[in-house]
Image (cartoon, rainbow, N blue to C red; front, side, top):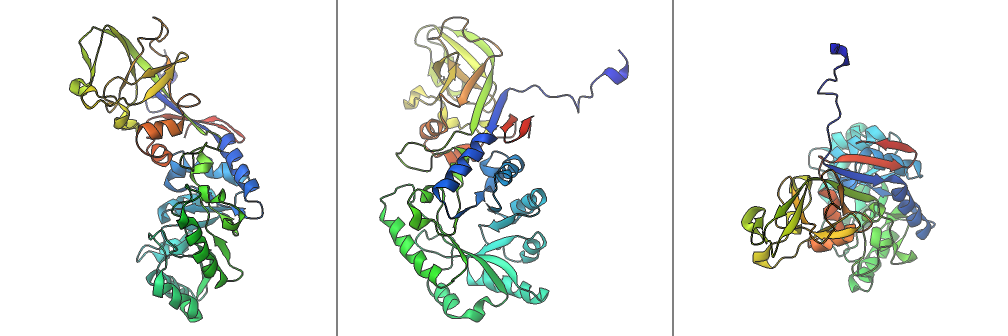
Length: 389
């Protein structure tokens, strides 16, 4: 064979042990559903943490194609990356202004959500040096007690117009703490406090509602809503049916199927013991791929763990999840139903994101943002051919 016909190892596609599928049509459908629900308000796309782990570039471009023009990220670094993808987008930095970094924000046309008088002063100082106003949001504390201008600082800012000299305030915002619980009294408390703040900034875009907050009713919508998890198919509520279309699918390839004799154990710590002859299949992924170790089973702690769906049936995880491998018990499936090379569903229509989160003792947000970079990522829909991130 001529040397020119030999594929370069650096260019040859690597075999994949696990696949992460992102349905961009479902993402867009969730965005449009929120836009319909919050009719009359602009819908910003919250794409922080690499678009909740799903990939900033394909997600941001899909949302832009759906008409989204305002985006929110957490850090200036994320904002700079997004600016390179969407030159004309309005980009807010939710974590505010890092001390000493105002020039970097301004260089990329980013709008920090200023959360203290110190941040306001630093942004004003840069505006003075530039000789022109600089756009920014103002984030106020209304009950979450995280970031936000609060108490006497808020009173001073509102009562002293010159305190904002040089700042072109384009957004006034706060963040709901308990919107996932519709009847929680903090929701109304924060709403009433935000009404008073908004009144002090007539004509400025106001924003309070996150994903769950959009469903609290029109009085929470104001001018701009900021959905995050709802875009990506996660359930924004506690104890309620998920209204969002699933966006993510996760499948792992079977590396081997083996027989385990009665009394033998599987995996680290001998956490799984065979009660009778068992058939064990091994999946090519683990906690090194962001699939939580706590989803394994452990007889010593009477911990049941998670499950997968394969060959039309559910199969429990057998023993501890290791860095690169997951063992599952497929004894109850007919012999030969699972074989080397088959794919098991770890997140999808049969094992939902909400189920995985519940079994891991966490929330869908954490499951998504922990998805690793070893998967072969496949994007479908929203005008794109099947591509890898």
